[in-house]
Amino acid sequence: MKSLTDASLGQKVTPEGRSLGFLAWHIAITLGEMGSKAGLNVKAPAEHSDPPSSASKIAEEYESAAKSLLDCVQTQWTDSMLTDLVNMYGEKWPRHGVLSALIKHEAHHRAQMTVLMRQAGLQVPGIYGPSKEEWGQLGLKAPQ
Image (cartoon, rainbow, N blue to C red; front, top):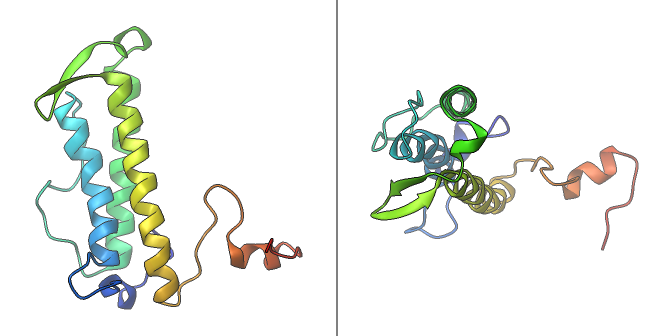
């Protein structure tokens, strides 16, 4: 999130596709949206709010929501509650399944964001290891 720029937020793969700013904001608001549906009192931007035009504001709101979600899970749930079922989108999910879905949701959209970031000329940060650009910064040759 901190690698985004205001100018990059409008980057899309296709004219009808989601923008980089939309995806970043979607990740931020989903922490509160899914968290609240699972019974947590997460402080996050409103579910249907429009993305800010400021990349730093999106990064700030994401970081704040992520910290709030972590605090809520640690203080409102116990390990023994993780198998309890909660109503999610008309289905019954175990609480641990909500957390798993949140992680997968974020990974999915972050992967989409890396494509848009490259198109926008931004350096992609490594998440699960060095990105293409980071290999050189580490003094190593990037794998082919």
